[in-house]
Image (cartoon, rainbow, N blue to C red; front, side, top):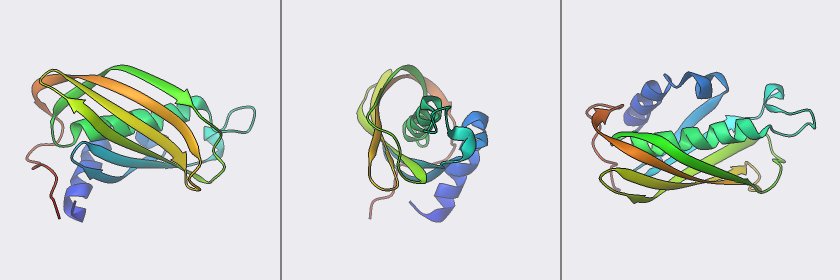
Length: 146
C-alpha cells in the first residue's frame, strides 16, 4: 500500500479514541490484513510489572478492526477470545490480524501478538458481523498488488 492510502486509513482510525489514546498505531494494511503496534509505556503495566492483559487485548482488537474494516463494509465484533502465551520481553508489542474467512454477513480473523524480539505474547480469534452498506473508509480500492 502506498503512503497516501496508509495515511488515509490512519486518519480514519484515529477516531478510535481508546486505542489511539493508549498509543496503538497502524503500521501496515493489506486486503484482510493489518499490522499494528504499541510502544510499551509505564501506564500499560500491571502491579506485577508486566503488560496488562487489557493493553494486549486493546492492541489485538484494534488490529482486527483495521484489518476487517479498512476497505470493506463495516464489520462489528461479535466474539473475541484471547489466549495469553507469555510476557513481553521487548519494548514494543506488534499485532498482526489475518482474515481466515469472510462471508456476506460474518467474518473470522486470527490475531497474533508478539513483542519486538519475536516472543509470542497472545493469540486471539475474532469474529464479526458485516453491516451492509456502511463503510468507515470511503473510496478506498482493494489492496494494491505488487
